[in-house]
Length: 288
Ligand code: GUN
Image 1 (cartoon, rainbow, N blue to C red):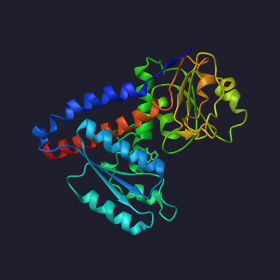
Image 2 (image 1 turned 180 degrees about the horizontal axis):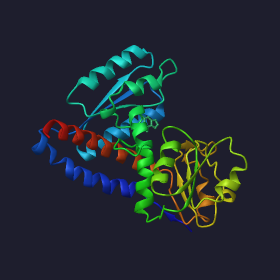
Image 3 (image 1 turned 120 degrees about the vertical axis):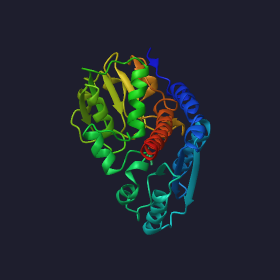
Image 4 (image 1 turned 90 degrees about the vertical axis):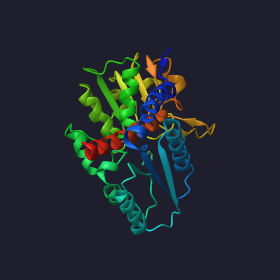
């Protein structure tokens, strides 16, 4: 039976540590870090993520503003809001919840956010800096995955890691972070031939393909560490489930993250950490 890697517990302890730091900021800097989240439309998943971000901000002691706009907002209006937030010296982090409605160009919106306030790590400048190994804001889910592996005592250096998924948000950046940890990284995806042959070579398997219970036991090597990034509805039970068939894979893996309670809480925790990092960089610039 696999060890269940408990992301909820780790996120809680990291948030408590962060809260203790944040509690000293008012006296040191005269204010607390401020995160602004912009939500366009009413997508149930997005509303739930944004609510989670506001709750975590309160737990850590961050100021949180959520701006909700109807999905009829124009691109120009959204860009106008971002310009104002970029210019506001009391805003430290800006996050636009994705996906955006089709009439809005997400790339344009992400690029409009000041790279210094880009707590998602999605701005082209932060992406470039990640690939150049320069100081930057790391995307939250990949950052959380590395923390989970390290906290579970998983050795990454020299291991064969297979990442299923090549998105800008998870697959590509987590591959780079794992490479930085000296893993041998293979990026697989929906067009990979003989996918099961590839995944069976993985000592560590990271799954971010967005299909419920896509990874089955026959795709996993005995004793592998399995990280499940998926958040899906099980088409049969309608319950939350990951990209991995947890019940079947659990008996084969040496360690596995559950859904919910694995990667998800770590993503939010890293968003809190990124907001604090952006705030501190700014304070160092203005005071130093
Ligand atoms: N939608 C799904 N995941 C994310 C994320 O990490 N950041 C943002 N902004 N939107 C998302």
